[in-house]
Image 1 (cartoon, rainbow, N blue to C red):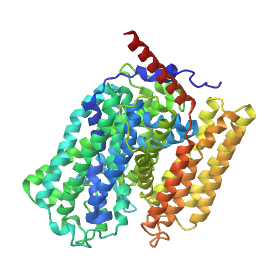
Image 2 (cartoon, one colour; image 1 turned 180 degrees about the horizontal axis):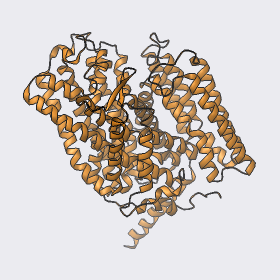
Image 3 (spheres, rainbow, N blue to C red; image 1 turned 90 degrees about the horizontal axis):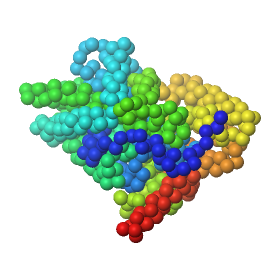
Image 4 (tube, rainbow, N blue to C red; image 1 turned 90 degrees about the vertical axis):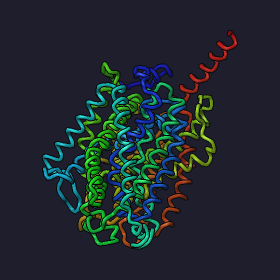
Length: 628
């Protein structure tokens, strides 16, 4: 039986009313900071140094600025429409249900893996300092060992579940005190690193940019820099449970990024100067060698111990404790975030209504369960921190572009909504936020991008099998069966293409006999176009509008792939499109797609409900004022 769309704003908004408004500004700010400062600072300083050398300092600055461009767009959205799981709900309001599904799917993938990577970070750091069989080497990368490492990581995921299950107030209170620790320890570590700085490391070994200017940008997405900033979004995801979201959400979003940017830059400067090449086991000045050095699994601890100073060695033990607390703190916050994403997808009927069911602590408990279970499953294809971080960063960056796209659409079709924070210079900052997201995704490199794109397109047949069927998109039984068959054909072809392409979910390059890129790319395009046309043909006429309004999204994903393969961040040693020309091509194409995506936004039924309710509230307020 088809499930009909909500007929009133009351029905649409009713789901959020069962959530408790118990989160204040300090809680929101600390949820953001607690999410930003996780495992990234423990690993990214070495990863960025291995890619860019001393220029990694610039990478942190550029990464922070890019995140601010993204964040300011969401600051207005989060204050204007504070909704739990808001990041997966805005796209559906401005671009329809198909775009909402695709973005929700990608954002779910990006978020559900974060608790897993934080659990992996704890195991990796502990494993680097102990000999209890937590890690082993595979193809030059340290990954979780079975059974000790894997079971340890799963136990941490269960801990994340328990902290979230017993209420958002408990989560916020626990996180506030843990965040103080997480803020103080990295700051003091940066200061202590400055006491053992060797100034020659900043300029003597290949200069300030030993790997060239392109390495600055590659480091942003591939080594954990962008990942380390992504926690700003948590204030938006918890907005539905905030006491005063209109005022506090923008302040928490922007303030958390600025605070953490200062800490990260200090850490990178201090770590670069504190590198002891002999202790790391690499040749002096061999920046790329750091990635596979003995320091790779515990760089901050190893840097402090290598100094041979007693009190710094003692502080290294504090860092080992922090290697458990910081990632775990981020892990349980992101478990809560993923819970609200599942909840938000359920509110928009992308998932069954059962995921909105709350326990006696007003927590959508089924959403918590599914978030933890799926996160554990992701440990299999990506069993190491360095493997998972690029995928998470690129997937999250892709979803963040919807802030710059959705905001102009809201301005056009929902001008009556109250905006406590109104973004100035929208004509400039909206496209900058969009381009920042696209560039962060692109700079992650081809090997990461192909995993993301393949995973994104995996969500397309699920839309037809569940959402379109459940919501009566098909006019008759024959259309439903035809859509099911098309989805099955697409999925079989998708699996075959990925196997023959040889790039997806691999720690090593494709084996001999795999397809060349051109054949792989053409086959991928043909498969996506086939299902896109099949979806448009089988759904009812009124729903074809949603499909057409979302067509810019698969074009974007497919268009960036050949640029990535042939560009400076692809697998070729001598790229056909050298830096910065490849980045300029992405910017030019991004601006065209930005205009198309904004133009594709429309006055969706749910946006009409919201704007109608806003006008009614304004009118009622006017009547009350005149009566008084």
